[in-house]
Length: 308
Image 1: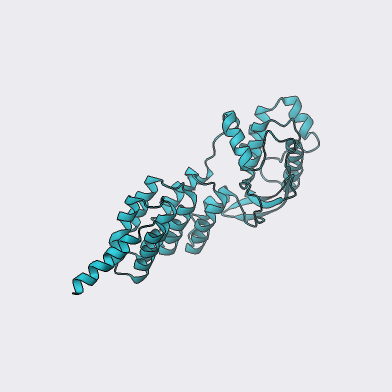
Image 2: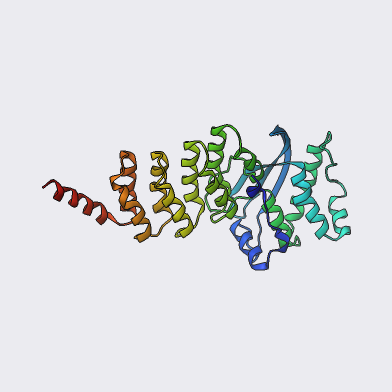
């Protein structure tokens, strides 16, 4: 839970990291036109003993594409991770001028909090759309609202991209809630996200076999190819007594390895004779994806020779 909620201070990122993040979200600092952002807080709900306020977010890109998604946050998230950081970093006169007509929500989640948060966020978005809005402030805002990576022609997003809320759901007592959360994680995490990878590795020890299997699949979607530590983790899964986990690991290994990888092939090869038929089938298909059909053929030839 805590791993997903940890965030670095974007205001301290070096310029190269700021620019790389902005480009990955479709905000090219060198472009003459910039995407237009809109943030509205319309509703709230209760879950896990907390009130969650839903940010409905929209980005209209210069080419006409529109990204629409939502992300849920608690009031303390708004205050500590966005409001306080911005207010401390901005000139007091600039802050007062920007939010004079839209004061931030009061402590305690009193009546009218949703309306106040919405007005404050709309003012913030309008300011972020201006050319003079500092890039480190823009990155802080985009990170807070869990902005998806920009991919030309991508379909609209219809899921809650809140890492904070997902952190609670991934520890839910219900196995299906955990299962669903593990499946969603690759959709809200960037490739190589250490927080997501750490949580998914922890979920490999979940008491439910379906959750563990989903964690293996999701892990293969968030790591960079040729990550040796992940290869080792999945090789351990290949020795698990549960065939569902072995099958998932067999299917995941070629997704995280380069074609012809000797280590991965050596992990898969013994399981061509796995006691479970589905595992054997998955291993054969994975070896073919790795370009190691020769191993399948050699085992077949050995079997034929033994019969003779």
